[in-house]
Image (cartoon, rainbow, N blue to C red):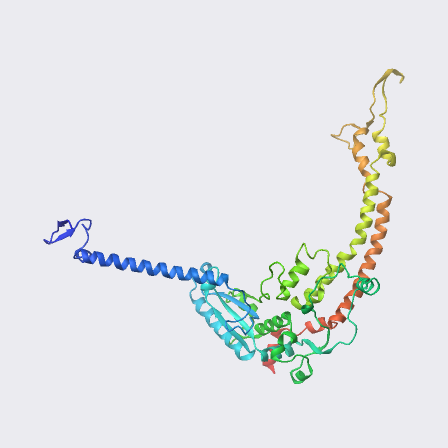
Length: 464
């Protein structure tokens, strides 16, 4: 290898001039070994990157699940957080340690007091590679205590009364022997039985149906499980001071980024594939714009998946939409009648404005017209005192034709009809609301929801 002499009498390889002797390899073998080491490190980095890509692809290709890694514990809630918020924590490093301590104590209290189980998921599995997740599962003991704490109404016996069936369905199936075309097509395995319910008490748990860990899916629906876990997360403390409790405060101070329950698996299905979950059923038989827009809503299944509040909301939406059908038909008839008044023969005002114009004559000093009329125009007085000119009456022809489009005798009739419609709609909605509440056994739902605030309960507990 060619070299140049240096000041100490040694030689420096060409290309390494100006570098201190300690930095210069002594011979070509050192250079080769360094290149070999660099190549090995590059290979290791490529292998690590390839492993991460394969893991990511494997996670994407794997079937979505709502269970822990053991495949048995169901994920009831998910808590998301980050170790560092770059926009906020660059100048407040102490907040990182405080938030970490709050999360640790909060988790310990949830596990000890409310029987919640946690499973951590590393940030490498998140889309942004920064967010950590805690998957939360409520044990059977936690479910029993939570159901009693919030006063859930759970099945206590079978309902021997006839199930509620729409009058149209009874007419078509019993009298005409036909299937109701508006009834949603629900598979038999998703049929929801109707039970009589009662407020749950642990001391009376043997009297409730399906009150066992093996039948937890029949004992509680998804909305009720989420309600129990959310109530437990709101009560768990994260510090020794008063007021240091509840997931909502941890969300407000950025200790956690979000807290949410999971859906029951994916909502899409392949063609001719059976429904595997209630979410897939609701998507195809309720939310899909092509398959469900002309069908009645499966209100019992909506209530089963989303809870009573959401179910009652969509009950009102369906009732309101159904009742809008009648004013829509009458409104179309009134509109067609208004369009027919555009014809001049049906509109006397338009007949005057759009008919033959009035002749205009020239008059002499005595007021006698001189000669034939100059033109056929009819001037109108100015509509204002200043800066307004005379205008032609014929210019109002188009406006006069449209005047009766929305202002005719039929619109008065429509206004009278709508006044009666509003009263009947409200009264029939009250009837439907009470019928639905009785069927769902939620007549005292508002009273049960008006529980004392958690802050008030904790304050009273300390004083007692």
